Amino acid sequence: MTFLAPFYFWTFLALIPLLGVYFLKVRPRRVTTTALFLWMRIYEEKRRTAIFRRLRDLFSLSLLLIVDHSVSMSAGGRESSLDQAKAKAEDLIRGLRGNQRAAVITLASDLGFQTHLTDNPRALLDAIDRISPSTLPLRLEALKGLEKPIGGGSIHRVVFVTDGVTRDEDLPTGVEVIRVGETRGNVGIVAADMLLLPSLEQGLGLYFQLASSFEESRSFDVIVRRSGDGVIGKLIEVTADPGLNEPEIYTLVDAEAGAWELELDLKDALSADNRAWLVAQQQAPVKVRIAVEEGYFFEKAVLALEEQNRLMMVEEAPDVVLAMASTPDAPSSLIFQPDGTAQWWQGLGDDIEEVVAKVLVGDHPVLRSVDVSSMRFVGARDLQTPDDALVLVESDLGVPLIYVAREEGRVAVVVNMDPMASNFYFSAWFPVLIQGVAMTLSARDSPLASSYVVGKSVALPGYEAVSPVDVFLPGGRHVEESGRVFGPLTEFGFYRMTRPKQEWEFGVSMFQREETLLGAEREVSSKEVRNLASGSPLAWWLTVFAMLVLVAESVLYHRRKVG
Image (cartoon, rainbow, N blue to C red; front, side, top):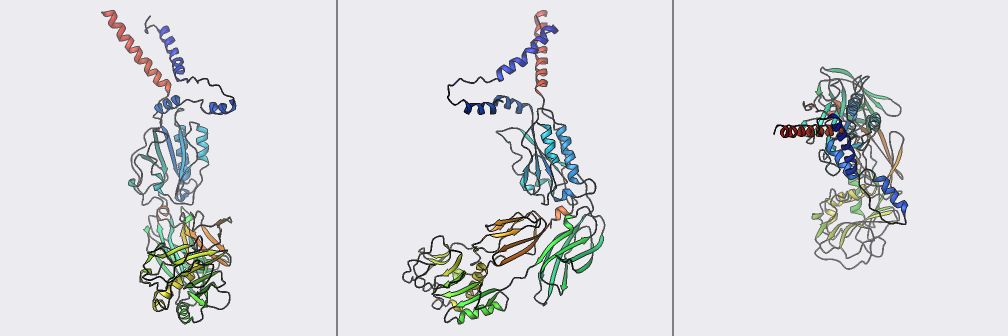
């Protein structure tokens, strides 16, 4: 018998798959157990053996298919860039061989897995169909690390379908790019701001900057309207040249602080960047009461800041109380020179000599504008802080010099010094420290901008606030935030934040030059993506093996016959 006889040859080939199945089969070891139900679950999960998975990965490549769904991908008429990207992604999935696995991932500011690795084409196509446009910009840094092997060294390829990237260098090594869409004509707002003008009793300053991907200049109107009632505050005729334009600055006379909208009156490829939401912030002064018997220096400091509309001296309903050697009954207070018995300190001892101050929390808003190294803490006394107090400055021996303490919804900043003996009254840092404490305890330490860039985060007002912030989003949803930062900001429009007796508002706009220009300033590699179906099915390898055996047997047969 030889392999040249077709009947015997095909009979032998029929045995090869049986031999493969025999060797791939893992025979379990019999173990006696009284808890059969515990083993049944493991048996169901381990039906596919590790050997089979290794062979499958050896003969096929895994594909990570990333679809850009950032805000610029929604640009276009009947068919947006995202529609084209989804169609291209579907073609790639349909072109895969049955033994190849793939995962569908979206990318805007971050990666989002729509499916994990699977060889089910229906699941992959459904995942692509579910992709919707995002309001967030493209952040290529999120791709870092995807070029490395995954799943214990499995080989994979990363294909990124996008309308363009800034430079090839921005992409991790090995990421292949498929470009969709084309440069479309678009004008957008890439920066804007609005603020109260101190020189006018009622008036606002407006700043904005435009960018255009049109090949020629375009003229149109910019509408500035008050949010809510829609009253137009100004109509500005502008001309946008190709590329990034010079900033525009205007004055809105007799305009009041509050929420305003900026809108470009033109039709272009992308509507998301044709509007900006701005809030001209008007921060009321902090109401301060002085609870000091001889408070001449305190009054002078407050009056100096009152001229700048920062503080206001009051007798009733204060936001912050200034005290010395006493503990006022107030929700928020600044206390100099601890003395006697109080809930804000314990174990009050003797004066400390030769104090060397050491800052522990330099970025705290109370100290943000104060030069602690120039302060002489004469009259500081040995003491212990209440539990959970935050020590901002201490001596070289560990004695608290400036700290923040809280108790049952009340908060106090304690300064452990005699301001008269330290000559602190005559220091420029005395009113600065009072202002820092007053602004912090009244939750005005982080002034809000008129508008924030979508995808970023915002610092919540009130570094030392004891109550959480209620955040009302543009879409009507409401969330509670107790941290120091809220974000990322994912919706365009006006946001409102509230605490008891306090309220803030700010806008969120697109402000993304790269997204507005829709690829006009982008470059992409000219290399074509090679054939995705590069893995070969097992039958192909068996056929090759059979042919090699046939050739070897033929050569040996002829040698024996000739010899």
